[in-house]
Image: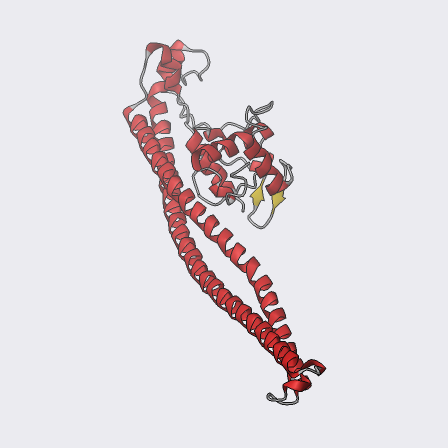
Length: 321
């Protein structure tokens, strides 16, 4: 099972000109500081929601696994029940044909000795009774398994409904985060008007003031271009990561499964990747397609998710690796 879904907005801190005044310990304008606090608060809410989401995802994966186990056993039990039922029927027909009637024991199995025929008839009865008992047991087992499957399907539906509820909350968090970031960008743009001149006096890295004015309004800085982390992650050879990426994508870090789409060696959904990036503080990875991220970064977020939520997001199948 590939890892699940949570929408988290791609947020980055926009640098303003006042950062050039860091040596003078100039604080960001109050409006920007307030917007930063709001973004941080909503990010924390998103992270808390992620925990509940992954808990629901883990429950859903466990229920799905149990359903699959039950469904895999049912055909085998049904086939064995059918075989024994056919065998019992065949023996009953054979006994009837050979005996002619229920009281003529001398013809059972063409026996010359009536006592021997009686013993053989009793043996046949016992064999048939034993097979019939096995069939009854198998039928009862099948009925129990079918009832269990129905219960598990109900539980799966309930878990899926709960998961949908969490996704709805995630969409609301996403909206709030986007609005908060927009407010912060507006605060930065407004603050830039009054800070550019002061910044120009202490640094040559900012734009000079426009003669006769207060300086240009510098638009918010765009999120930085993704720079892949090179090298090999310290946990690259951990048994869990090896097992998971082998099972999910045959170790292919560029893998794409359009069903999700599930991306990369660990078959992340984009929103799950974003959630883990937000949780780990690696906000520059938010929005980066997992299959385009470096092996180091994919290993890093997969290991982070494993330490955070265990093997549940992948269905728990590599939990003993």
